Image 1: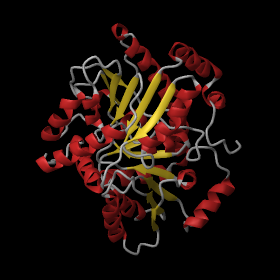
Image 2 (image 1 turned 90 degrees about the vertical axis):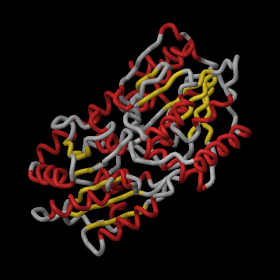
Image 3 (image 1 turned 180 degrees about the horizontal axis):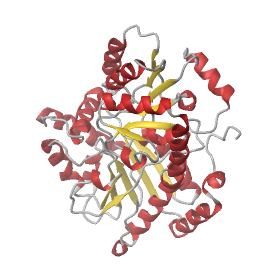
Length: 414
């Protein structure tokens, strides 16, 4: 496949998903032309949310929906607070302080003065901009939707009580899985996140392209390597990955590649990276890479060159790095948390684990069984094609816009 244009058109996806899928999307969009939709999140680079919006917005516009993407701005204190709250929604014991609430509210009020929310539907992504709902007044014709990309099933009570007082004022909410949702007095919709198969991160690469990247990054191919791609975040358990590699290495001559960076709304990344480098020390077969946010070609090549791809998260929203690896036909070993089990069907599309020891066991099993790696990889790719590509995400948003226009005919979509 040739390198794609920077912004693929809808028809470019037909060879991957079928012309019927493309025709269906155009049918759903026909009565939505001219609708105005604005997406709001906290960063344009780093993380799956930004990547999804970067592709969803232009495809919406191609279908005749006037879709914009706005980003709220904040100082380091704001992102320190919202990162802590992110962890709290995942269940970490984070205390809600008056100072943190004041920082959060001041930043949202400041953004409310400058951000353009002139639209028929306002979609707010995650906790950082949730308080923008204060702009909704009586008689406001806009529909407000809160899209939660993280697991809110067991949040720290104080933080969630505060945030939910805003979320309950929205017209609808979206969660990635039924298990992620909280009981709310507003309609809830279920959307799987998605990847774009035509972006630089996911397009097909030649073996020469893969080799060139690995050589540039200093990763020899004299032995198999296992890989984890993720932000340097304690919830991704990079040190646990290193422990699993050390156990597996006792019986297998392998390398480990940890590849990641940070997002502009995650201030903990540098600290976690230091911890990982201290744990790894001078291990010559362990490569800790700090990649810039736009290292999509490098990530693609790393995933395609890997023998096994890991995502040993201990908490997870959905885990789009898993989706990416499955799409590339790789055998995946991942933590049985968050949205990962919806992607890694144990023994069918990949293998799940709970501990570093369990992860090491699965690594050893797959290294000893290349045919099993191939089988899991093929099934994983088809599962992604069926459920987790951008065309499916686009379909869900189109159906949601219909449901918001005709609320008595609510649609619950996967």
